[in-house]
Image 1: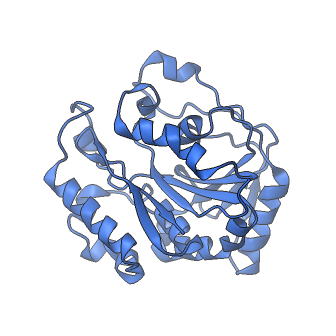
Image 2: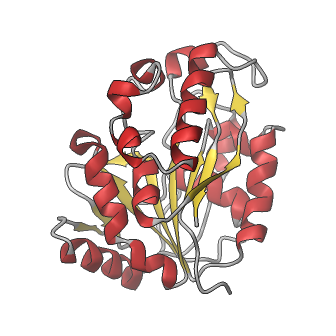
Length: 258
């Protein structure tokens, strides 16, 4: 078991990625083996939004099928990884120590922002997972602060997995083929993010909504981008470790902070 696990941001794409033949699926299938086995995972998913940060406390969270209009087999999938109330308490204590509010959630299960990438990365589902919610109305700086508060977890053998999407215009996702070429506005934004992350331009990233090309077009709402700031706050230097597109509108870029 590695002693340190650098924070990670992945673009989870559509739930159907689990059963689709695409480069990102292949990447995630190899990623867990490359990273090694953490003692626990804190998943920060775009699909759990709350007023204040919340963490899952259930010892055996359910698998949520929080999507519609996809192949029937996706609704039969289960990711039976155990929860970890002690890890959840540790997350809350780290947040509280930095003056960040945090609450327990006794019933929340795993949404597909968490279980879809984890099903590929760690298919045996034997690593404890807790989820930490995001607060889109609080903005990027709030999530950067959350990440900074959670920095000690990486040294404690815990993987911080931020799961969202580098680009996320769902209107332009529908009606396109899996391997459609990238839309120019999405490709330009993704290149800007890659450059900002790999060169450590934190201030630019924090102000992405005002300065990144086509920011509003790529993220009409912010919930799929702000998980990146949790990983950014928790980590050091950022590296791009994957770059691909699905359905033309979804950049599947992934980054790790060493």
